[in-house]
Image (cartoon, rainbow, N blue to C red):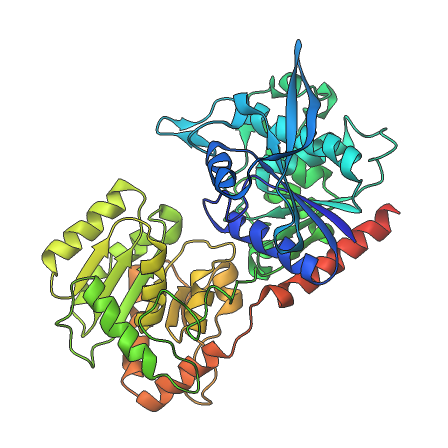
Length: 488
C-alpha cells in the first residue's frame, strides 16, 4: 500500500505529546513491513533548526505549490527530508505561517490564525500528493489535519486524481477540537453549505474535528476503551452525537511503544541494565533514582512511587491532592517529574516542603529523569480522569514498575487487575473518581509489595507484555485495506 501521513507533530522533529510519538513510529513500522509511506509535516521554526543540523544543503523537492486564500495566494515549498527508517519525509515550508517559536501558540495562547495555518498545510499536502504520487489512503491526525478530510470531500470532490482516495482520521484526544469563527469557511475557501449541524457547525462555530469525523472514510481512537468512551457525554466533549452516528466506522487501536528506546535491558539512560531473568540491576537503578532526587536516606525496604506527567486536570491530580498526605503517612517515598498548571506545581512544592524526607519533585520535563523513574521506581501512579491511550503505564510494565491507574481509556485496556488467587494481572486499577478509591488501590499495591514472591510474579507478568508497534500496525493495515476496498 501507498500511505500518506499528514500531521501537525512527528517525533523527533516536533512533538508536544503522544501524537508526535505515534506519527514518528507507526509510519516507520509500516515501511519496515514493506509499505510505501510518506509523512508530511509543517516546517516549523524548531524543525528548520533540526534539519539545519541534518541536511546540508536542504533539498527542495518542489519549489512552489500554490495555496489559495481569499484575495491572494500563498506559496509553499516542499523540502525533501530524505527517507529516515524507510519513510519519505516532506516538510511544507510556508514561513509566514510556521516560522514561529511555538507549534500551536505562545505565552498569550493559541495563534489566532491556526485555521489558516493548518488549512493551508492540508491543502499543500493534497497538491503535493498529486505531484509526488497519489496514495492509496491519507491517514490524518486530530483536528489540525481533519481539515484535509473536509477539503478532500468538498473542494476536491470532483478532482479526478483524488476523489477516490479514502481518508482515515485518528483521534488522539477529543478534548482538542479546533474551534473557529464561522468565517473560517471563507478563509479556507470551503463551501458555505457545509456550515450546518450535520457537518462542521457546532454552537455557531466551525469545529474542525467534527468536520473530520463527518467527512473521513474511517475513524480510529488510540485505544478500544477510549473509542467507546468518546461516544458518551462524559468523554465525547460535545462530539458524542457525531461519533455515535459514525459508530460503525469507529475502531479503537492501542498505541504501540518503541522498545528500542524503552527497554531496561538496553536503556542508555539508566544506572544498570536488567531483564526478567536477572532483576538485580533494578536495585541499582533505585539507588540512582533516589540520589537524583536527593532522597538517598530512604531505606532499602521502602517502596518508591513515581509520577511522570503533564500537570493538568485531565491527569487526575485533584484526585491525588485529596489523598496525598495520607499516602505520604505510609511507609513509602514519592518522586515526581513534570510541569504544567500552576495550581498543581504549587501543590507538589507544598508537599515537598511538608514531607522533605519522603517526597521530592522536579517541576520540569527531563527525558533522562523520566527513564530513571521508570527504571528505579517500584510503583507508578496514573489517576487520570481520562486517558485516550497513555504510554507511561506501558513503559512501566516493561521496566517491572507496577502501575496503579484509574480504569479509563487506554489505562483500562493495557493494565490487568492483579489477582493474588491465581497470580495473574499486571497492576492495580480503581474505578471511581474519589481520592479514597485511589488511596485504596495504592495501599493494595503497597501491601502486595511486602510479599516478595507475589511482587516478583507481578513484575514478570508486566514485563512479558508486548505493546510493540509491530503488533499495533496490523489492525491499522486491516482498517486501511477495508477503507480502500470500500472506495474502490
